[in-house]
Image (cartoon, rainbow, N blue to C red; front, side, top):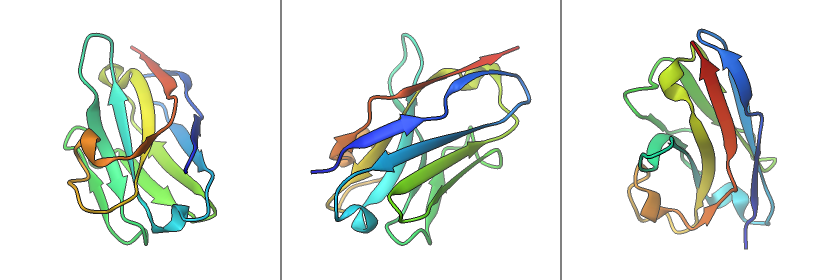
Length: 124
């Protein structure tokens, strides 16, 4: 079993930066691919970024490419560095863990474990 806890959300002005963290419990965390998703009010959960188990492969949604960076330290923490934030980035951000590594990392149903989410609000 893996438990995920996000932190680092908050209120920031447009153009600012935030770094989200996702702390994981469980012995096998280092073998899981990890992803970040977000959900704005009235919208479906959408893919933001993902990182392979080794940290060597990263994937981004077009909307955040060049502004967000996903990383992991395999000390059971995954990060999402968010720069040049825009009002449309406002959402609850969730981290997720892919235990089996058989699905598409941009699809929510691929993931087996989810955190409770952290709110990011970008004021314009």
